[in-house]
Length: 85
Length: 288
Image (tube, rainbow over all chains, first blue to last red; front, side, top):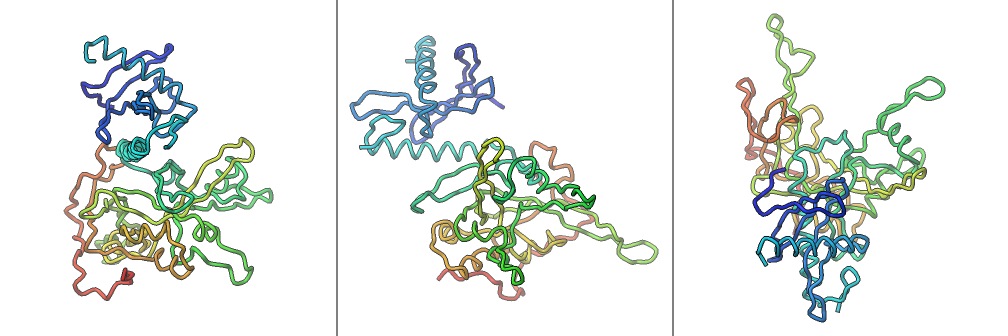
């Protein structure tokens, strides 16, 4: 798979993640590719009714919501570390 | 107010997230491998109406319809590939990659038993998304001495798609299937076929069949309409216009290529007749 310059790698509890950055509906959507073979996860930051931002798995999958939130936080940290936030 | 992943979001946010879901499905479709070989029984992308039949989902289904009487994966393998019976005779496998549109709703007049696809055709119609398909043209060379055609044909692969559409819809029917040993639950699908049009009768000249390709209006009617049996058969046997299709030869080893659809010319191959000017009126349905 060819990766663009926007793609990066994170560690998630010892599992390597390849993160691809996609643009959909004027939103940034991240495709999370797990090295351990579990199904790809797509996440984006949604705005809740109270105005707070929240990482969501798309399509809806409450079973993967925990991963979405945790990996979303790691992505934010990654961008902070490279001075892009 | 709506909930998404159990979080309260505004309706506008909900709609955006749903639109992103559809974009992700399209993205995954584009990332899919370029060739789907039916005999791999691999997943294909399918448009399936929602319960209310006012919207649709893009889902993956296993290509190769499994009826409910097939109890588990071992039986499914036997069903598809055939098996040796206890008395030593051989039971041929049943290929359910395709279903003949003319016979979807058939009932055996002798036994009164419904054909395998009838219930699905009445209740579970869907569309397989495709960018094109591969078929083989059989050409019989002549014996140099006798001038008689040889018994074995040379087979030339073609790629067939629509001239102005990146994606198109093929009529299909699906069935939910559960492995009663493991509890694995999947959805299986078969693509409906019809008599070949003028272009496809030249390409797929061994069988004279083609997938039932539907334009947008017929595709929507196929999955959401409350259709009579007559209408189901009418749509299932629709022939897509030759004029809107194209076919060209590709390399013999296209399955192994990263870009399998690159045109390749065989100097010995007679060209296809694309024109339909002198063709008898096709059995295309009128939309109006």
